[in-house]
Image (cartoon, rainbow, N blue to C red; front, side):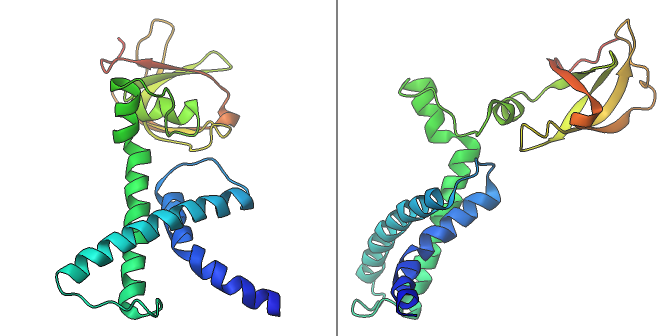
Length: 201
């Protein structure tokens, strides 16, 4: 029982970091982490949240707001820390999804070649906004626009709209009435070819 009581302050300290991590999990596709990795990540975000909290509290106090420095668990302190945890989580999620800073470090300053995407599968679908031709194991091919795709590259699933089967002469079989189609690993996806927006004839 005493050990549980000793853990409570630690969990309360890490709670803002876990809130930020939770926001990232909701808004981003990320590689799974073990328990230790999650705790370390929560600790890092807690430090960022605490730093932003102290800066914002100082600015608010400068314009006349009142905060308690003797007791942290007051409504004003907790509300501001919650706001910081949410804002930091959303800001990092936006950066991971759009790579504004990382893109500059990569393309402009050549500091890194890394991306925020967890796999080549995700990276490809994020940047290759084109029609695709999906080649199946049995030799058939499907042309369409990839509206949705799986987060997990092992799942290899995608949903095509404005889709059509292609014949041997690259003509659209369903050109007059495009269809929608869901494909996954069981469909026998062999190759995905990215093509220009003009449909084959």
